[in-house]
Image (tube, rainbow, N blue to C red; front, side, top):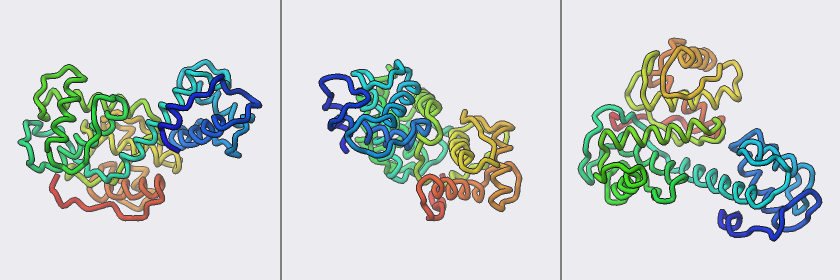
Length: 295
C-alpha cells in the first residue's frame, strides 16, 4: 500500500463502527503497519473492509497516543494523522535498510572538503539528514556513502536554512550541535520499537560511565529495545549520557550473553549488542560487521 493512497484518498464522511468500504480496509492496513512501531496499538484482524470493534479499539489507542479526541471514529483529523504516521514509519523503515556505518562525530568537527571521504563523520551526518527528512519537507534524503559530495552539501544547506544557521554547507560545530540535538529530540519522542537502527560498526571508542557522546545514545537505544524482550536487562532511558543505569544495563547484558560483566562497552560488547539487536529486531543472523575504517 502506498503512502499516496492514504494521503490523497479521504472518505466523504467520518468512518465509524459498522461502515463497510475500501477506506476502512486502507485504515486497517495503515494502522497495522503503524502498530509494528507503536506497539500499544492493538493489531487488527481480520483485515477486511468492515469497521469492527477491533478497528475501533485500535483507532481509540491511536487517538490517545497522538493527542486526538478519543472517539473511535476516523474523522478528518484522525485520517490525516494516520496518513502522516504511516508515511513516517514507512520512510524510517526505508532508511533503516540502507546499512549506515556509524561513528562518533563529537571530535574534530571542522570543515570537510567536498569529495573527501571521512566515513564515520559524514555517514553519521547523512543518517541524521535522512531522519530529519522524514519530518522536514525542505530537507532532502541522501545516499549514505561517507562522501561530502554535492547532494549531501545541498542537504546540509537546506538543514541550515530550515534552522536559520549560516549557509556554509559544511559540518561546522554549530551545524553539528543543532543537527544532533534535533535528531535526539525526534528519537527520544519515539518508543524503542519505533526506531529501526541500521547495522552499526564499532567506532573505535570505549564507552564507560561518565561518557557523553552520540554513540552512548545508540547503545541506550539498543539496550532499551532488547530489554522489551529480555526483561532481565533493566530498561534505560536514552539520553546520550552513560550513567549508572546504563552501566547496570550493560553489565546485565554482558552476563546474559556470556561476556565479561565490566559495564564497559568495548568492541566485543558493541558487536554483541548490535548482533542481538539485529536478530531480535529483524531476525537478522548476520554477525556485526567489523570496523575497517578506523572511525
